[in-house]
Picture 1 (tube, rainbow, N blue to C red):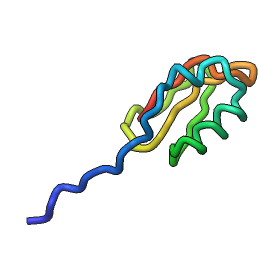
Picture 2 (picture 1 turned 90 degrees about the vertical axis):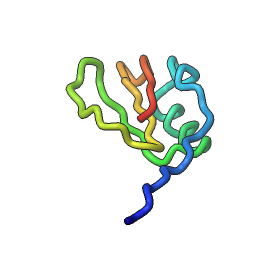
Picture 3 (picture 1 turned 180 degrees about the vertical axis):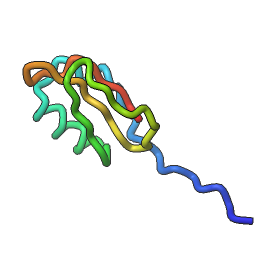
Length: 71
């Protein structure tokens, strides 16, 4: 029987720290902190809810991050 895979650790980061940042600045900061995937969406977007380890999500309005969550 195959072993259960262990997902890689996510960066120890606080998503609320990205709220209020410019989208470009938030992306650079996320990359420097070790996030492997970034997703930016406009407010009210319909998105998939599957959890992806190492992904940080930004809700962006007028170029500014208004909400941030992991997965």
